[in-house]
View 1 (cartoon, helix red, strand yellow):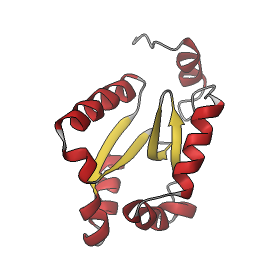
View 2 (tube, one colour; view 1 turned 90 degrees about the horizontal axis):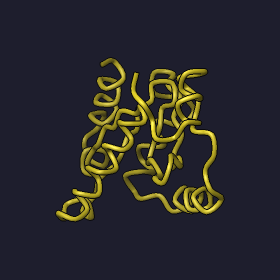
View 3 (cartoon, helix red, strand yellow; view 1 turned 120 degrees about the horizontal axis):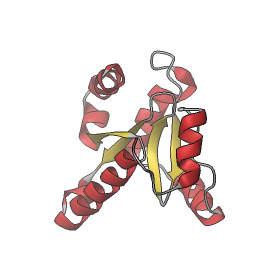
Length: 137
């Protein structure tokens, strides 16, 4: 059995594998709300395809605070986080931060799927196909 650093998250995961972490700070919640209001073009496009369970009946949330991070999109039922990466994610420092973040999220039972903004903006249904494939794994 894996020991989680947050005992409440461990209890929540055992009781209901779809449950969200117990508490998030007011500051983190406010930050997530501001991100929802100021989505990038790629985030807006993907959200239009995911919202209202339009993608195979899967329910996604957007800009969800999880621990000290905010996930772009989360399917709670499958514990799948979809992250969209644009040009800022190309530099070495940001890639290192993303790797640390992904490791922390995986340690807490989430799967992380990273998609480039270009795939969402100009790739037709390729982004949705990759999400479906990740769900099927």
